Image (cartoon, rainbow, N blue to C red; front, side, top):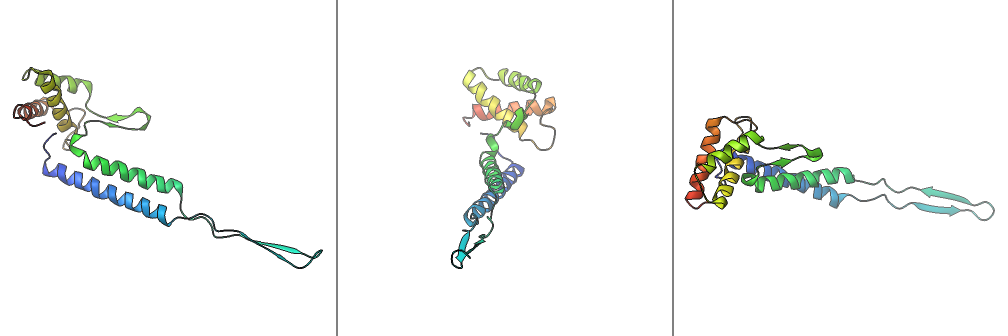
Length: 165
């Protein structure tokens, strides 16, 4: 797992707190919501002069769409915050994603492959390096500079060689 900077920790904690807040709001809405009240029907008078009076109950409170949004968004943000340092790709509905482009991935693989020989170590170092590159907030994650790629590869390689995974 990649080491987290102070900025990463703050982002992780913010995601957890915001996600937990959205989950709490969603659960509160679910617990407080209730369906429409019962309709009452009263019959007055005697046959043949009867009158039927229908009184509707209260309107339904709550919305399944809003409840689902708060619960879903809260769960996603909470999990993103918990696993912040392990996220290397984010998939979006409709096939979109946020990840390193293939050229950068190839550069990372080449830089790590020149330093390590064991396939398991290379795979672990590659995962650490790509997670570090995607998690960078100071520049475009799709096109980091060669110096940044090399630094991520060196950092990942040193972590693997020292026994951190």
